[in-house]
Amino acid sequence: MPDLYPFKVSDETENSKGLIVVTSGIKLERFLKNPVMFYDHNRDNVIGKWHNLTVKDKEVFADAEFDTEDEQAKKIEGKVKRGFVKGGSLGLHPLKFHFDEELNAIVLTESELKEISVCGIPSNYNSIALYDDEGKVLSEDEFIRLNDDLIIKNHNLLNMKKALLFAKVLNLAETCTEDDVLLSVQKLLDEKASNLAEITRLKGIVELAEKQKIIALVDGAISANKILAGEKEDYLKLAAADYETTSKLLAAKTPHTSVTQMLNGKAPQSDDAKKDWTFDDYHQKDPKALELLKSQNPDKYKELYTAKFGK
Image (cartoon, rainbow, N blue to C red; front, side, top):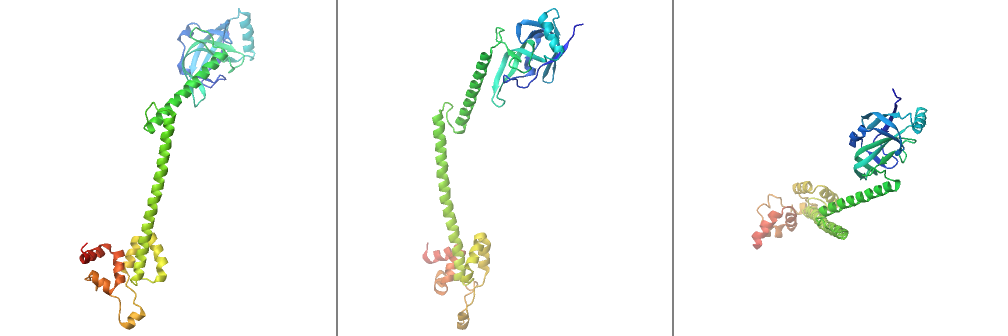
């Protein structure tokens, strides 16, 4: 029974070439018919064969049998036995692969196993060999060109996707140019600035109208002797915080009777006494009450005004 030496020959970690091999995508059928073992992916150095090829989770294991009739193989077997050589490496023919921008690596999603080599240093630049369609191992320069081509193609694809996304969001044709996108974005920015200016203008108008409404309410209450002039600021703050409630409170107040009015026996007319007043009655008898009616009960004021002037 020959001596067998267990090796882990692959996993899905990124190797020093920036390559990730997807274990489930490795095709084993042809290799299993001739499980040849090279040294450092050199087909002139056939040093044995592999047994018990096993895939566990995302790792690949195999047992090495060295050709003891070959001096080179015996020499390497001795180094393996003594622990000086530990590396196992796949020789693969790439079938499907792409450059992953997020991982910044080439991902080999589908491949065919050509051979497994014993290597002096695990995960070095020779730890995975890529074979072309003719069975030739890609040189370092060829691998670098492949890597660069994939990066360029991937970036072009990403740029194309970005362009289509811009076109869709900006409602442009898919054939739009970068200048079209920039002009469209600038137009949107200009429209946004214009809209913000208009919103600010309208907000100012609304705020001014609200302020004038509050002032008219409080001034009307002062004119009707419902509050004192010294209370104006307090009621302005109350009305700014809650206009409706302040308006109800002022409407329910009874007008103050001054000392002079009491001495002269001229107390302000009550609301009940005014319920049948005409526009002229208010104008002649209590002009301040007419001003208060205009600010606090515009519907009643309009009714009297229309009855008087017909419009």
